[in-house]
Structures are given as C-alpha cells and as structure tokens.
Length: 254
Length: 350
Image (cartoon, rainbow over all chains, first blue to last red; front, side):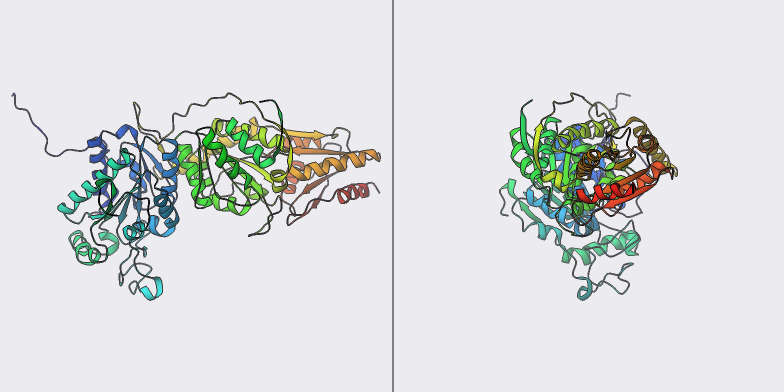
C-alpha cells in the first residue's frame, strides 16, 4: 500500500508481445529488442518505417510495432531509398543479413551508401545463410563448414570472407560506420549505443549510417549457444574487428 | 495547357506523368527510352519532385516499390532487357498490391537484340512477366498523343486497383516526334490508408507479399488477386476500330503496327476491297468479347505484329475457331511493310 514499483526491465512499447520464431541462441531477437528500445527512447515509433529483408529476419515486421515493408532478396536499400525519398522526415531502417547485404544485394548496398541516403542499415552478420539451411554466406569464415562448403570454405575456390564495414569505409558519403557484436552483455550494450547513434544521425539528417552486428547462429553452425558466443569472440572477431570505422558528426577522422 | 506541342513520344510520357501528379521517378538508362530519364532529370527539380538514376533496373523498380508503399505516385521506364530485370520487382509490387506505372519502350530481342522498335515483349507484359500468379494492366498507345493520355489513365488505374500498370509501346512510338496537346489532370484523388508512412494514430501497416500463416494464406491471397483481375476484366474496355463494320477482311494490330495497318486499310478501300482495322487499347485485359463481336461475318482476320506471333494467340482465343486467322509479322526491329500487308489481303480475294 502506497509503495510505488518501478520496473527495472520490461518489454519496450515498440516490441510486439508474440512468440519468437527464432532458434535458441540466435542473435536476431536481441537486435530486434535493441531497435525497439531505441525507437521508444527516441519517441519515433509513429514515424518509423522498417524494411525487412529476405532471410531469417523476413518476419521482422511482426516483432516491431512500427510500419513495415518487405523487400525482395538484397533490395532493401533500394526500397529504403524509395521510402526515404518519398518521406524525407521519417526514420527509415533497412535491416539485412549477410547473404542479402553482401551477395545478392551488393550493388544496392554500395550505391545506397555511396549516394549517402539518409537511412540506417543494420547488418546482422552470422557468417551463414540461416533460413535456407546453412549454406555459405559471403561472410562465411575460411575453413568454416556449411551445407555448400562441406569441406570448409576454401578461399582458393570461393574467395575470402568479405568485410562490409571496411568496404563501405572506402566511400566518401557515409557518416557513421561501426561493427559491434551481441556475443556477451557488454557487446550488446555497445551495439545498442551504436544503433542509437546511427538513428540519431539519421534523425538529424546527417546522412547514411551503417552498423554491422556479429551474431550467433548455433543451429546452422552446429554448436550450442554458449559455444556459438565463444566462436564469435575467438574466430570471427579477429577477422571482423569490432570498431568504429567512421563517425563524421562526432568530428572523428574518416 | 491547351497549346499544341511537337514532342517525342518519350517526352510526352514524361510530361504527362508530371501532370498526373507523379513526383518520384527512378530509372536506369537504356535505349530507346533515354529521353524519359533526361526529361525527368530536368523537369522533376522544377516541380519539387525526385529524379534518381538508379544503379540498375533492379534497384530502380525497388525504389518504385518503396516510394509507392510510402503512398506517393511513382513511375519507372525502361526498354525490353531492362524490363526483364524489373520483373522481379513487378512481381513483388503485384503481390503486395501496390500501385506503380512502368513504361516499356520495346526494342528487338531476345537478349541484347538491337535498339530498334519491336513488339516482342507482348507475352511478358500480358502474362504477368515475373514469378507467380498475377497480371498487370497493359496499355497500348498508338501515338505521342495517346502516350500522354494513357500515362494519365495509367496512374489512375494503378491507384484505383492497387496494381502495377504497364505502358507498352514500341521504340518507334517513343522516338517519333508528333503533335501533342497535353491532357488536363483528371483530378481523381485516391486515399491510401494502407501506406507505410508512420503508424500515427492507427495500427501499424505492413506491406508484404509473403503469405505464410495460416496455411491457406497464399491461396486466399491468390484468389483475392484473381477477383481483382476479374473485376478489372469486366471494368476495362478500350478498342479503336476503323472501317471495321462492313469489312470482309479485318486486321488486328496495336502500336506502330496498327498505324501501318490503318494505311493498308485506306489503300485497299481505294481499290474497292473491304478491309478494316481493330485496335486493342488494352492488351491486358485483352478485348476478347469485343473482338469476337467485331469479327462476326468477316471472311478472315489478319494479325499484324512486330514480332513473329504473340498477340495473334489472343486473337485466336477471342475467335475460338469461329473465323480464320492469318498472321503477318516482322521481327528484329523491322517495320511491317505496307505493300506486303496490302498484297496479303488482296490475295485473300483471289
């Protein structure tokens, strides 16, 4: 009686209370929640349009309580461009996986970045195609076994894993580029900061922002969730360093 | 604007789109439609609109999808090989039930083909074109004036039925300069409560073509689309006939083929041979009933095309074996030859 309770942890308003379709240990749900928290924090739920890709996160719009649009495989940055050009004051987020962003959609990725579209691209890199059953992604690690590289990825045959941040960092227009991870709580907090900054810059019309998030796929990596988190730290991070590549609005060097 | 202008067909499309209220245009260069992006690059900034040269036809059609989903009038244009690339996006736009205007200024094919005008994309345009069970409305203008008029109509139809509408014209129509009186805006306004423009004071909107749950979701959606296509088929009627009533020999043609065929009718009539012309203005929905009616009592029907026989299949479907159908076609960007059409029909009577 008379005691006021303040919840320390609750569901963000922008997150829909539905059952997840993601596998145990998958990182998508973490990143979805972070986006919802940030949308709440910024108070932009009613002006946000989110573009879902083809891949495991195609149902992204079921989880977020914002207007959602589904793009063909790889075309999310082009769709986002169309939305943003029609609604320049809205928040437009393109959420994409590795096959979407760096294989079939490489052209759209590079050119939306190069135009400096005032959108935010959130790139979830789990080094594999999840939805289709664990095939090689452009970001699959050297030696990594997948459904289409049963003997492990051989760079002599199929090339090396592509580093998206480094590639986009060669372009002039982008204002914010960072790679983070969700393999432990500290990394999750850094990811939230990075996405929040990217969306803040978009709100301020600074230009194109890009956040790559290393994420777990225990199901298709064939390991348990704890091992998956360790694998990011030990195998992925050395190849995909976690760092801020560019933060022009903060006055940092390109 | 009621003055008479001398314009290329391609320019007439672009200006008509502006009149229709289109303020977003995305495209990738390809011959023979390059006057459209050039015109838009100059004109859109003057009217506060967006012209954006995309990195590919794929990107362009997906920009169209994004802008359309956001609730604005939007157009793209291309030519045959580029339209083939856009088919991915057109299928998604059809599946998500978005309005869009797509212009195909056809050139010779298959493959890179050549850059001369042709009518080889009839099947692709009228049978959906991309994956899945869908249709697009297809308009078949025959002059620069009609390119302008039909462009206005295309925007209204797209909004009214939430469907991609294609303007299908051969490269000769796009390139030819003719007198045009720019049409007045139709003034029709369409509410778009489905648009993804921020869930303010309403539940969120989702624009998607994925239909997974429940198990029957996609079949239900396919049936819903089919009901729409049936309605369009019963709503849209557009044909142009020339000396067809008492004709013994009826030519069926659209676009540049119809213009040459009309000349052939004049030539034959001057010699006392009763020829006539039937010109569909919509290629989908094709005027099956109208052609069936118009062909009653005719001795023979001649389909004339700038392909080796595509529309002729719809002509045969219209007639269902009731009347003899002949075909005359030129391919690879070549024009139908007036003398050859005249001679073909002259021979029927011999």
